[in-house]
Length: 481
Image 1 (cartoon, rainbow, N blue to C red):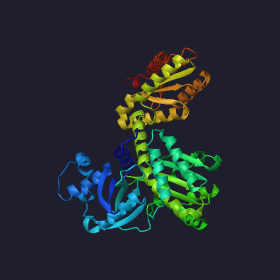
Image 2 (image 1 turned 90 degrees about the vertical axis):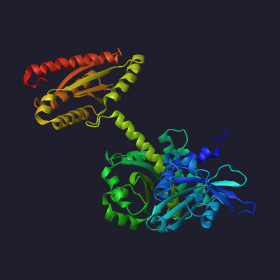
Image 3 (image 1 turned 30 degrees about the vertical axis):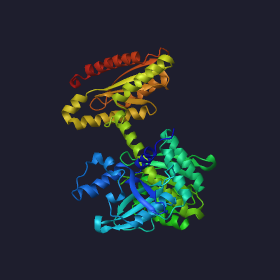
Image 4 (image 1 turned 135 degrees about the vertical axis):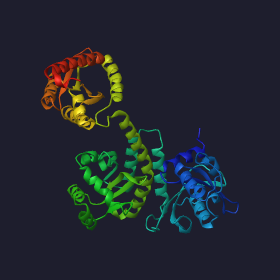
């Protein structure tokens, strides 16, 4: 059963990070343009509409939350004066399937130029009604060279990519499909999608495609310094896309970003296209394309710009969900997993080990003397001690999950180490954390060869840890809490 047109178009406009609406465009019996109406609008369009036409002019016909019912179905003249030129380009986009980019001088009204984009909608329609997508942004100046007219095949490609982004597939699978199609469409050697997290100073390749799979882009970026990725932000300050088409361009960017250009030369990159994903004024990722047929440069520029525009929203949503997951599972102070994450993992692992027992080790680490350090140096000193404790554990157990179980207690569960190897790591911890006046752990552990009872093993390890802690305070009674 086909889904209603409204539902499909509503999903599409909600994909756009900028104000976007699907317009219904009527064709009169004589073939001319009839009524143009707002058919489906996204949240950004509603907020923009509310700010410009309700708050600014003191009109209060509706609350922001009620604007869907207020705007949708209304003539476009609800927000602007009747404009034959606007109707004409809407008609061309909806009925002639033309992609249109234009500027409208609205500086007297808003203080900005309005930059308009109209994209044809290839969907079922009534005999006298067809649809197109309309999105806009406000600019201080008109940039006539920013976009040129896009051919129907590019428009179709972009719509196909957007539909892929809205399907039920897993996020990374969709990213790989989209980037593989882009690489094939542009006949490039390499294509990838990266996300960037400036707070954590990290980046991730979330989609890649290489012609004939001759190498891996993820492997290429594996040892890539974050500082090089960060340098791209300055390069795109004055442009929405960077194109390096020949050695002259390479030399030019070599004077601005020498470390980056050096990596490209070492990788024998001939040309490159780099387009940022921008969300709420911040760069959250990039579309990266290399070694394409430069005779097709104009078309490649158009398609990369368009695809980046729509990918921005999808990447922003993915990044937001990842941050939520990170915040719900990671202890912000120490960077190890928190108690909530430990509880979930213990539940899952307990069931797995019960069904399929295998050797594992558990260790509890409790800081000795934290209270006395807090009392002497304040809670900042205590926080520093917790950070140092986590740092030592991360260095010695790089491949195991480390949890801050609460307060000054950490837990490590290892499924990979033999008992001997695990004991060697515990000895390394004792060696690094042996200062009674600063970092000193009470440690308890338990190794299970075959029983598969994780909760019982954790209880034994916890009891052993308290025996070790009592021994510490017997030797250092002044540290006792």
